[in-house]
Image 1 (tube, rainbow, N blue to C red):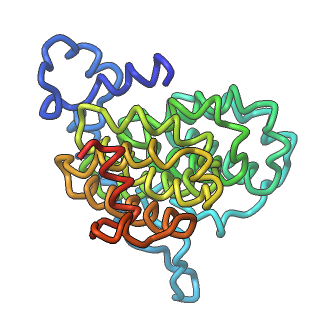
Image 2: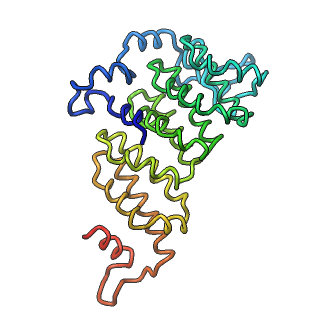
Image 3: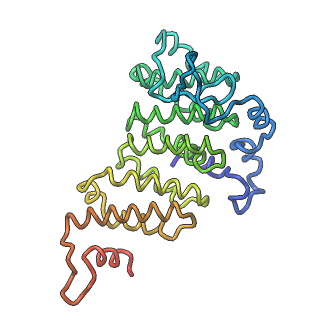
Length: 307
């Protein structure tokens, strides 16, 4: 896990930290989703419904576009159109992403998404410059910028898969944070981005990135990481799970069975059932002896967990 990612995790809201006084300055500087009430009031005043859909000129509804405010649309990936001029778009992209004009930033993020979908090779050599600017937008206190950056992250995972693994840490920590907050429409978008991550990034590369978050002090972060883990591990397949090690995976799942939040516990149970299915496909499921009622799976778990 990178140093920047660790610093971001240390900037959680005060109600979820044991000692908030020592890092109050960093909190205000780095993570201020809930700190600017004026921004929120402005957005509520100038926004249409965040879950509404646009209406076309003929009166039909376009379900692919959500209205975030009067000037920004949330466009689903399948409804994005290609850019008009690739060269101009690429040339002006970084400046737009780093602009102080939040509307221009949102437009630039949508252009990044279009390039990811239609011309991903054009940005391959620019990813090390583009990803930090996406992360910057993920930290933006303005909800419209933040959600558009989350949607951009989902398209990033879809386009580049394992090519972005070295840049994953700052994206991952922000998506875990956003999926754990109280703004529902931001939270739901972040959860969809995490699903995209576990779908498109190979589990062998993703699991080492996720495991440290299972021990995070924030129970919401632990829950989201546990859910990601339970989605990712089955993608290893039977041979992949055997190669990774049943014993390691059992210990990981067992550590979440008694966690504070039900989401963590449910994800752990789902994972253990998946591991049991794979284990019994490759081992004899009958009791370990004629005098024992323990199946080979139960015996295996007890031996690894020292029960």
